[in-house]
Picture 1 (cartoon, rainbow, N blue to C red):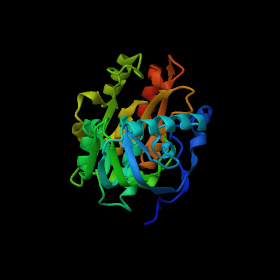
Picture 2 (cartoon, rainbow, N blue to C red):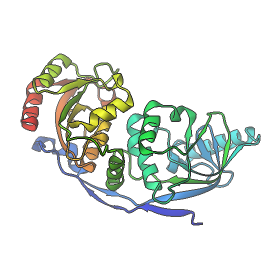
Picture 3 (cartoon, helix red, strand yellow):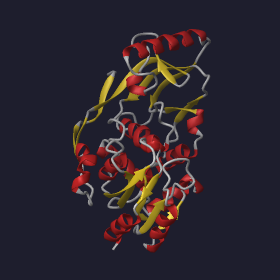
Picture 4 (cartoon, rainbow, N blue to C red):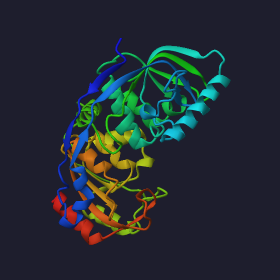
Amino acid sequence: MNDRVRITEGYISKRRPPLNLAARDRGLFEHELRKTIPDAELVLIRDAHILDDVVLTTYAPFTYDRLTYATPTGMKAAARSSLHYLARLRLAAKRPRKVEEALWITDRVAGGYFHWFADALCRLNAARKEKPRIPFMLSEELATCAYVRGSLELLGEHDLVTYRPEEHVLVRSLWVPQHLARTGNFNDPVLRDLQKRFEDPLSTDADGRVFVSRSKAPTRRILNDTEVVAIMRDHGVAVVHMEDLTFEEQVALMRRTRTLIGTHGAGLTNMLFMPPGGQILEIRAAGDAHNNCYFTMASALDHTYRYVLGEANHPLTQLADLHVDPEALDAAMRIMLH
């Protein structure tokens, strides 16, 4: 049995620029227009111990942070972490539950909505080409999460092994797919294949227009929300709070949607459930050249992408609320929708 199997081929990803890219904003996107996406392998770890959501072994390298992001980065931090977990393993020397063979697809951020779909499920999708029948492992907490459970149901992925946080599990052959790309980037063929697996073969033509509101969220809200909502309604766009919908309702809505509008946030991840050829309009912080994951996702899924910049009240996009120029937003929507 080979310990490493290549599951995706490396290539150069060439992204289409935003349709409304202004010359003054080129610096926000130009470094994303051409990216090297590496090969990815399925790596076998023999006699892998699962403890506290961490994969470790009693032989070097002991912990597997490059595959699982489970330990701090840097040699000193990783060494300290390895010693910590090996000590924990000795304390947990009671007879472990044994599993013969399984896949491991998660990391420390896999529980987030975006990362579950963009990272964990893409790794599972790629690994299935080589290992179509073996179960995969999830913590009980993650396995009971509504969108995790719902997405696995839609994909027909029922064969999983769950474990409790305090439980010690020994997996004789643990297959771990490497991350397919740096977070915020994608292996386009794998993501498109995942999109296809989520398609409803009975769905009719998609023509819906949806604005994902974050007015109930703690951050990344629109400060002049009343003005923005009025513009949306003027253009026949439905204003939706995704947190008010079940996961299944979100998927059903997106399958009928052609135009998706929102600020930088997890709700835009739902473009994955839209038919190819949709339109994305992201309201994003002026000057932010780092948070481009929805631009790159739109390109990978064959959606067009436009943007409107807002003035942020915090230097970190994840913590910022935005003030949006209503005239700029209205102009962008008129060009996109009419």
